[in-house]
Length: 253
Image 1 (cartoon, rainbow, N blue to C red):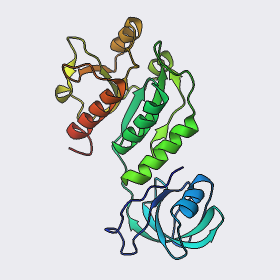
Image 2: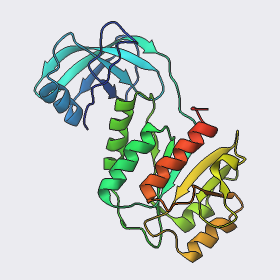
Image 3: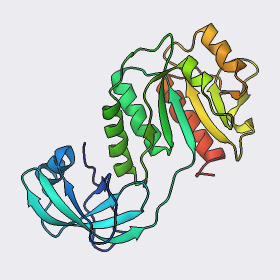
């Protein structure tokens, strides 16, 4: 996993050189081993040195200042010193998408993470381009994007499921914002979802077939919305609808 430099000087005068997502508890004095791809990048690419600092977060205990206390071959020991920011969680928005070409899937993992979604769920449809996804690769992209953009959580990445399975097991208390271009779809700004749990659903290249589209529209939780007069690519539509939701109902509003 790549480590991305981000300025954190406003949080501490000890100038962390990067941020790291760690899957371990954080408290003062906790010692963490950074190895694997993270360790390689930290030691061999960033040339981290003893007594330098990194930011640490695990998705639940805020942001911590970590001091490099040992450097080895492709790995480093980091000691958590002090909390530099309290935990902030993102808005509860799910993103459901039909996988598209590999490079664009990676792009969407990054953008959905940067835009603050809480859950990312790939959905198999009749026109889905990919029938298998490397979930660990998707998680790595989300980790990297979270480190780079400054959020303190990493979105949950679900295993791929069929559209029928998703609709059958859909929670009763969450609205499906279905990006559809039918005449009765409402503009996003007119969607009455303030204070409502939501998920956005984006189809594959070529869209849902008619049978799928009807199943989605017949679901009791579905709210069809339009994103304007132009036909957008799947990845463009995703960035657009998530940005609109955040602006109107989420943590941008």
